[in-house]
Amino acid sequence: MPKKVSREFIDELPKAELHVHLEGTLEPELKLKLAKKNHIDIGQTTIEDVEESYHYDDLASFLAVYYPGMAVLQTEEDFYELAITYLHHAAADGVRHVEMFFDPQAHLVRGIPLHTVVDGFYQACVDARAFDIDAHLIMCFLRDMSALSASDLLQQAQPFRNKILGIGLDSDEHHNPPLKFAQPFSAAIAQGYRITMHADVDQVDSIEHIKQALEIINVERLDHGTNIVEDQDLVDWVNDIHLGLTSCPLSNDFISGDLKGKEIIELLNEGVKVSVNSDDPAYFGGYIADNYEALAAEYKLKPQQIVQLARNSFETSWISDKQKAIYLQQIDDFVEDFE
Image (cartoon, rainbow, N blue to C red):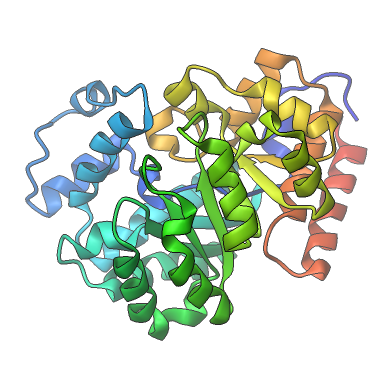
């Protein structure tokens, strides 16, 4: 174990990523390339133009930039290129296993068939095995659309059941509580999907939404979820059932002006299985290693804490106990050999 955290240590440490939106990995270069290829006018012609448009200070203002950018994604090859580009970046950051969100409803409303989205993303998962990443897909319902729309999406996804690991819930949380989606999530559980749900930071009714996610939806993970520190009973409950929280420091900083490192450390010290992830790295200025580094630098994390965050990422992933043991041993071997 090194005496202090270095970028080299972070980059090479085996880790899982459990909270990354594929559409949020659309870098300005690829956005411009696909816009040109598909003859889409996005109102920007240079990387600087695109970067200049990335100004937001809350969830709603971010989503107002995020969704229009998806217009450049038109073909199966586009979705493949988006995902495989992210996966190569993740590999360079030491990611060995990843469970990636995608938002089909945002593409269906644009007239893009579901098979175009799923097949493109899934082929990237298959091809990532060649560079030692185990990649899986989590299909998200958009919470600012109706529960009926979510149920319809679940029905449309049946032919792709073997390509989709889990179901999530994302987008604008305001006035869109977990309870709204109780029926489609119940149906998803009955179909054998793994279940997670966003509990975005510092939202109206954050604690109530977390309670609904745990009590009514029976989620297996909470995405973000650090507001849970406001209720010790919830912290104890999450700890007792070993439920994971997927924190994203850099996006926290963009949306709330705070990495939420104090909360992450508090949860870590209490034994909660919190992990570090990148969320929408193309929009928030950093991939997973950047998030580890920002958190470590701002809060002077010790190598042991960084290692525990990485262990938590595998322990709360949706892989077999056998696979988890292999990855956890890789962490132990890396730490022992690192110089």
